[in-house]
Length: 513
Ligand code: FAD
Ligand code: DLZ
Ligand code: SF4
Image (cartoon, rainbow, N blue to C red):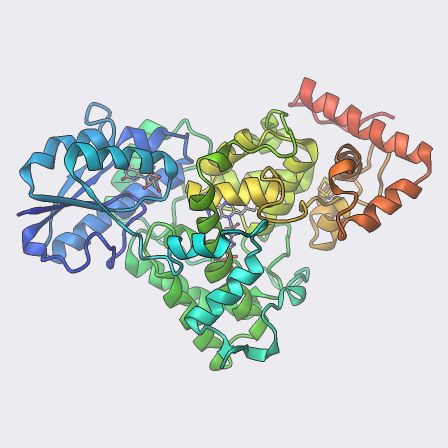
């Protein structure tokens, strides 16, 4: 065999650029479970199990296709990183290639492989937008708005297009997608029984990574292409129809609502994002789902997902260092232990994260994200948390969501205004507040929702930056007109909460004011 292809844990795609067109009988694939990748952050055990189990199943799939596969199962005494693995085999082959990876950290290491081993790095063609085209599009713009990128993506793919116009006369139906959900409890995603290969991985992960935050079992993620396909069909059959209406909903004892949980499969290569969008579009034309659902789903994938990737590669490594709101607070302890907060929305979001290595978008953005924004958590610490705790987290997608969408750390490059919200937003979107000891309608006093005074505290301390923003002007007028005694009381309430949080994270009790 003359060609060696290194396949990474999130590159488990049949049509990976580094494998495309190669003769399996002349090709060896190298895959390795290594400490460096498994521990560069303390990944949730479910995330490590997902990746190792899916890697092992993909290795079998490649063998069935006729490739020779050298596979390193995780061994603390084995090669510690991918460079060490490559060094063992590089001299046996005429040609070595790899598809571009998803993180700047590893990308830097790969550049060294070009020098040391003559490795060829190929573009990752699993994305719709080419990175050079994205750079071209973004060049010269002071702010790069997702909505305009998304329209170009619709034109380029022809998805939901009627000639050169958007199907249904509108590009975006987001305004229809903000309903609270009060129907029957939802079924959630499809679950899979671990087979013998996965069971072995679970034991391994328990032994070596069981001390990381999060529960390993029950483990039900799919780990093969067939599983991921079945999970998508299940989404089409049971969730897509209602996906749009309830996209921003939150609900006690109903963790999944109509979210697909497909990110875990798409991001490691088990599903092709464009294929999913085409099939969702077909479901609309077949009368199986409404336009706001299908447009919403397609926008997340060809819009947001592609856009954040473009932003990541356009701005790294400077992006990771940004802290536009000068936020330096440590991440509260209860992000690692949901029993340590009595704010129900946060408790539910962290519990779900601990149990499933997943939470839906509105929990990431408007609960754990919003609270961290309001109290001014250091964006690096926050970014590390999101990278560790979610099974779908890879830096190319995680970082712009955290730094741009949540922390406003990029100074408004990604979104012009921060997504700051009070408890009133959370109470509108679902019933978490009905199960909470705090009252979202109250701003001051021992049972007042802490989000409310923290919201005003945030606005007050960032007044200079945001007061002239057209979409925030009304809120600042309300703040300016507010009775000074009430303003003082709100700021005192927030300051007392923050002091308590900083001093005794494990005791976020209502404040006696
Ligand atoms: P669905 O609601 O069913 O959405 C369908 C698909 O759209 C997802 O599978 C995903 O591929 C894509 N998508 C939706 N929103 C986004 C988005 N904002 N950015 C990129 N893709 C999107 N997503 C990740 O895949 N990995 C991450 O590490 C990640 N970190 C996030 C951190 C924060 C602070 C926030 C606010 C969002 C983050 N997201 C991330 C985006 C989004 O929350 C998840 O993609 C989504 O919750 C995954 O669940 P789902 O598949 O059920 O999503
Ligand atoms: C996330 C991850 C983990 C936990 N382990 C491995 C591994 O052992 N071997 C591997 O090739 N890839 C792993 N990955 C995925 C890589 O970290 C990922 O390819 C890079 O972060 C780039 O996206
Ligand atoms: Fe969260 Fe406040 Fe509602 Fe409690 S009352 S669930 S803290 S928003």
